[in-house]
Length: 298
Ligand code: ADP
Ligand code: MLT
Image (cartoon, rainbow, N blue to C red):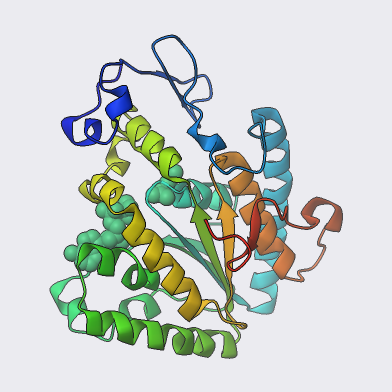
């Protein structure tokens, strides 16, 4: 049984008198139920499919794409390539969950996830990009950033963690910084996970009650419920300033977590011409779910 915390309850007036239950049949992707047993299906909001990807189909597709990711990794090791994938999006959009599936079967010696906390005092005195530069890949490596330098285009200005001047400088420097990375031969993929407003709220509620997800619910998450529009505005400005030809954004509609995960994998694989690629498995990304920033704004 779930009683929303006072903080969360204020954001769910329609739910305050109800006791909710979480259905863990698919423990990986639990569903919130009303007292009458009907599912809260906020994932449908603006979603291009009327059903979520079934678990059986997901397992098969995910496994075959994970095999392709391994081929990509072997190829990168063989050729000394460097790959950087940014996982960005609002809180609860599914960044961490997708990274977990990306790395599940990769050789950890050549694939690293980087999730940096708030900057230290020392880091605050450095060039903003400096602490991220420290984590860039060497030859043969794939680095997955769970949040990235784009904190300064979203959470930092919205929560007041940076000055206007720092924000403006970031917006000017980010395309230049990324140009240097790409120019140096780094494959840079920027994924934006897009979750709808009511689905985000549902995911926060599930986080609160599911013991294995409670650590994911931060004070910032609760605050972000009131700042939906500010985050939207920040996102639009970010796309305008940083969706460049050499480092474009790919938007992944992630109200259906399983489709989002497999399509994110597919869109990374589709961009690289690695050895032994199975075109039948990789195919083309599903344009209902992934697309360029300009075509798929939330
Ligand atoms: P999560 O990454 O789990 O969603 P939060 O929502 O708490 O975590 O924080 C979002 C991001 O904001 C994190 O990358 C965190 O490091 C960053 N952050 C939190 N507090 C500050 C701060 N005072 N200054 C700069 N960045 C911060
Ligand atoms: C997020 O996007 O905030 C989390 O990483 C989501 C998740 O892991 O499902």
